[in-house]
Image 1 (cartoon, rainbow, N blue to C red):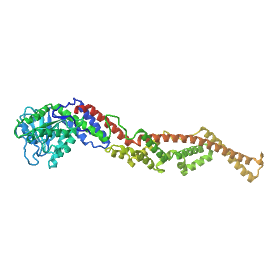
Image 2 (cartoon, helix red, strand yellow; image 1 turned 90 degrees about the vertical axis):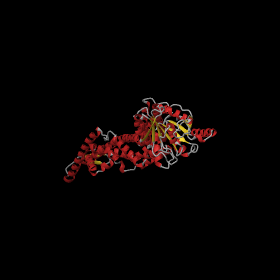
Image 3 (cartoon, rainbow, N blue to C red; image 1 turned 90 degrees about the horizontal axis):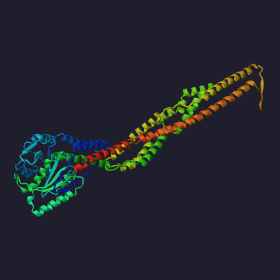
Image 4 (cartoon, rainbow, N blue to C red; image 1 turned 180 degrees about the vertical axis):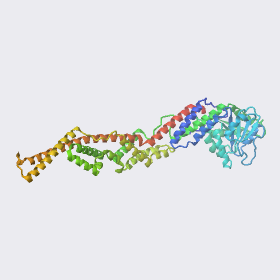
Length: 560
């Protein structure tokens, strides 16, 4: 939040107006800053009210300038107004409070020009004066800021953001009043364009005391001063009711006369308010519009957090189990194509019994990952890794950062990341080989040989037909049917082993590719989306910094 203005004194330097177009661009940038601040969970009501008020004020006549007399009970605001007017336009008395509602003092004949502005301000009590030196200037006598009525103070604070200039009125008894300094000046001096501190009832002081009180006021204002605000005049007056000839009023009249440059003053006041709200939002977000925006989570910490979360997610997915499923699926396909009729029968049994789905279905295994493990370790890895960022975040942004670490939201993000990684796999096509068909044909022939050999042996045993014998090493002479059976069984076994070995080799190669692909996809998804909530905050912080920089560059110097 910008500090209070500097360059105090009894002389006033005119404010530099915001050129046509610049203020409008600043308002657009303020709206962008408020949108970004909403994402960060900041209170943007003040900034949006300023934006709306500025648009409303710019839509009214550009020659209207509104100045308010603000002070505590009994400091003589109404008497000062009456003295300036040379007639009674506001009742003055010792009763608390005297001014119940704002009174507007406007030049006679300017009601039509000033009417839209006063309607916009909600001022119903309007008095006219004949002073020619204050054309297009509306002077408001507001309720006492230290009134016992809370509604009076609320009315003053509601009007202040819409007023173009302020004369803070005090007297020798209340110039150190906390209600003025702590309740109003500390908050509003930095946010208002044209201001003066008016020490009224100075005729009660001798010359040395006047100088001492003036120095005290200048010292008090200096403690609020910074280089970001406009000048504040310190004026000494003596207001006598219905007497406009008091020489003590000359400095105040001269200061008021400078308000005829209404267009410049109005635009400068609006620019100052826009800059103030943009800077306050940036300060609450913990970003410096003048420099680079430091991330909530630096790149090294981000990598460590996502690596830890990715590892936990992959453990939940169970990549070794995926490999086993891929190898089993490959062998199941090889069994159906490369082991002949018996292999086909075995495959049908596996499929109908559901065993193949349980142990040889890598795609289904991945889809059912929620049934096997919890993502709690991955969520905890994210939360623990982001705790330092939560502690380092700006206090106003910290609730939004904490919301980004809410377990339910993190679980949904991680589950979506795993599902997206699975879906993005182009194919879960189990590998195959032309050799399996050839081996399957050989297995079919081998099976036929086994069947024929068995039938031959049965006939031989039952009917005892003559059969030839074949010489077999070690075993000696063996009937041909039995030899054929043994050879067929050995060949079938070798072919089955060959198919199994080849299918295992293809399956392991495919499984490694699946594992690498799923691992890479999960890693990308987690890196891209696990910190999506934090990334939205980072984008909003950068957007807020950029919008604030645009506001300050466009209107900052002109509001000073």
